[in-house]
Image (cartoon, rainbow, N blue to C red; front, side, top):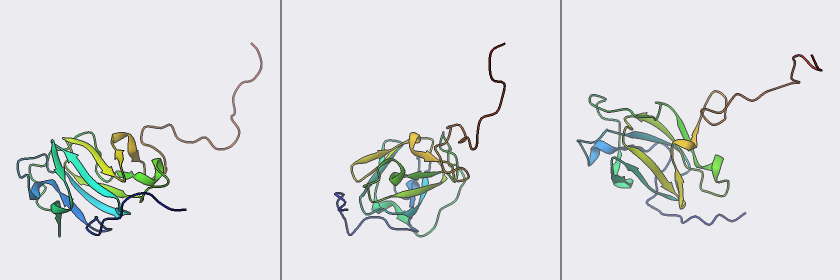
Length: 141
């Protein structure tokens, strides 16, 4: 199957760390780590800043003063779960994120609704999957 996302030689790669504070020291300090994919990466929008490959750092800076928002730490945003024909960008939230809006990749938007629970492999906030037959009272009273 042919993917239609653009392949940019400057795209992010597994292991890269994007730190909002590299170019925006007075921001909420979002830090994300690329866990996979990234060939179609465009940008991260946080605190009205556009974070790109220019914001990749060798290691995460100090956690002091970073402001967390609705994004829980260590949560995974996985493009492939919502867009199977994408490059499959997967990122982990490392810190900050109070001003997080979206991640743009392959023309797709990953937002808070793209969060996946590592333990259960499903969307955060979704009820746990039921396994086996349902038990309980049957019939009429």
